[in-house]
Image (cartoon, rainbow, N blue to C red; front, side):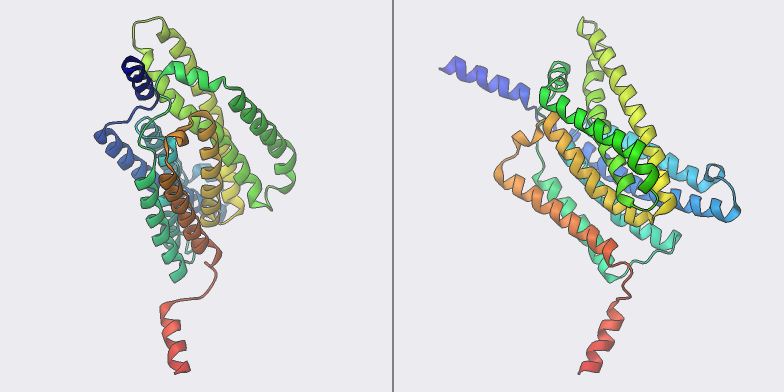
Length: 325
């Protein structure tokens, strides 16, 4: 019984490795900085598109648009580093911090409104992100290349990817040409569904890269897997980039960023739950805590965007109370 218990404990330790506190802190720091950088990208790209339209030229010639594009690349690199250090279910929701930062930046650069409810929404988004950090999984369920290959060939995950591919083909070739410029959910759905490929691919590349430089038979398989995942990641990012800019040409950057965050995060967490099963290491209390944190973030984002057109501030409230008295 003692030997069997020790073997079971060893197997559990291999299946759910806890990152070191230093790695977690570094991963969290990189994730937070990346979310702020990503929050500025839509605003800078939108600013570049607006400037280019005023001049009657392509946004590809505008330096502000290129600044937003470079910021997006840096943010994705930061996300890649964060995904290799901490669980996906922690990194992805932290993107919420980019929404209030982007809204504040848009109020200055694009003169978009941010009233008292929007500021309250910013506070709620940040508070919700802290709750997510506190209750996030503390261990990895997939830690080796062999485990990753097994998960990638799981029939449930393969079936999920087939459904996502069919939806993407329908959206890109039939729905987007007719309804994309008038319905913001079309472009958001395309970009968010692609997150089902980009985030797991990023996480998988980090795992496969650990074995590439080892002088053993598995290094060749790791290299092939890494190249395949890089190709998938590259194609996904290119398509996402195209439709993000299409959306920014037609819609408000803050509205797009907020809705995109909620839909993208939901689909990425679904894909990660199916592939990596990181939720298996989360207890009931932490699960409820993460659900409350995500709900708080979503409510904050709704306050930022839905009520942005309301002319509502504390000064007007004080005047109204004085008249009532």
